[in-house]
Image (cartoon, rainbow, N blue to C red; front, side):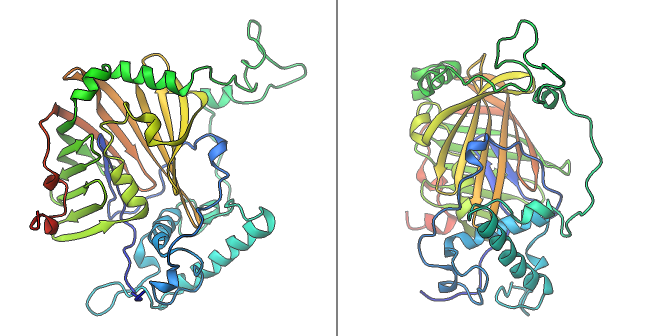
Length: 406
């Protein structure tokens, strides 16, 4: 395998068929995303597969045992954990391109020392589990904050989760054991099949969903800076997806069923790892009908609350690097939140989609309001139009340079 000094740094596109988040050049502190149940937080990093980093990239010193395909995800994680970007560690050459192999910045040398340190802590104190990471200390800051934050008032949900206080504390009058504050919650009685069936019925039924094979939509997207941009999107039940954002910095990202890519201005590149997974999630038109096929080990985990609504929480794995938590409204049966947790060799990242304003479209109930939070951005998307469309040509999702051969 030939060695190359180039790989693409942070700048993750998070898109779904009903949500899009484009990372802004302006870096900000990480947006808090609620963690999934504890069962998914203890898993080890993915087992290395394929050529290792030194076989593809030059001057790899602290990540020699990391697969080359995970180097990009590791760089994305560094940027999120420290609230920074590629230029914090890397320099550019005379042509303006990143010379990733150079060690001109002291921050790059420090990063190597921190990698060795966190790995040693995890090996010696946590049996190799990924417990101490860059985020543990940095929390989105270049320099870790050594002073604890001031206390904040607890929310109603946090108060309800506190253990009983005082002698003899337990369930309140009229509450059965296991239902009071601080008690272990009862496990859900619903099965995956029952939840899937209710989701299908809530969205309009099997027949209506089977007729909805292609979708086109448009609306406005507001980013965390308050900037509003028109957008249009297309997707199919075959797993293809495309979204185009207008405005001063237009962009197009897509997944053709196998490969994800993004074009911003005249610059185009393929997406890999976390970026590819996030864009491919946009192909969710058939999610309700194929819920159990989309996730490995899908299981009902717990009851919860979102904005005062009772929800049923499910968990499943979408890839070796990604586990997803789905929250279904207990009353309506509709999917109201998706939380995906990515595991990189040195830490974890989360991204969350919240769905609202459900309306019927050609007999199928779909959300017209979507809010997306990643480690770097919040995007609020309002749909003005969603349509069931005739079959879309595969060329709509292919890279522009690939269309000529079709």
